[in-house]
Amino acid sequence: MPPVCLVWVCIRSVWSYCTVYSTSIYTSENSCLRPIDRNGKLLCPVPDNYTLKEAGLKMGSSLGLCPGRAPTSSQLFLFFAVGSDVQPGTEMEIIVEETLSVRDCLKIMLEKSGLLGDAWHLRKMDWCYEAGEPLCDEDATLKELTICSGDTLLLIEGKLPPLGFLTVPIWWYQPQHPSGHWKSHQDRRNCTPSQGGIWRAISAQGENRTELQPTGHKEK
Image (cartoon, rainbow, N blue to C red; front, side):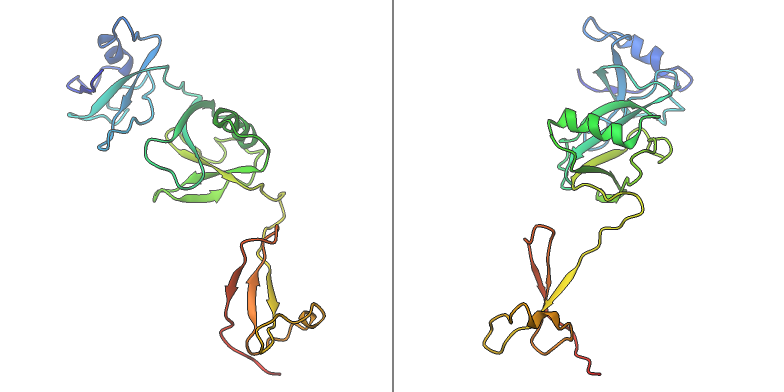
């Protein structure tokens, strides 16, 4: 059904507006109204008890009549996606209680995404559409972390450390012979920087090493 151009008086409720445009396929009991942005993306459903003014709708706003109920006053409508490279239109949708813990929300999203294992965590997408800080306190509720309807959460691979612990990168300095070969492990125990050495970032699995040239040399 094409989007509806809004010309209703602002004091009318969204539920009344939805009832007017209900069809034999969509009724007021199983449908909701969702604003459509300039790019054609369906936004968060508008609660039925909102007036059009409370929903922030203006003359000329576009609405989509969609299947499914709008969230109640105690529920959140969230978008979520796997990974930080989110392509437009690939987000999934979910309605959860605002008192749901981050841990339980993560489990539900993993199940809906068809992912297995517990080596995942959630991050909230920030205003510039990038992965923000991780939701570290997995026992906190979504409400306590000020997660709101319409927010996008990202499923990022990697298990978070326990509360009170930090994950920090470790750089392993490996001196190099003039011939270009690495020195023995015994020589590498000497942590004093020398000319021609290379800093190597070592992951937990020993892969994806990155080389950095030292910027200077200090002598004691």
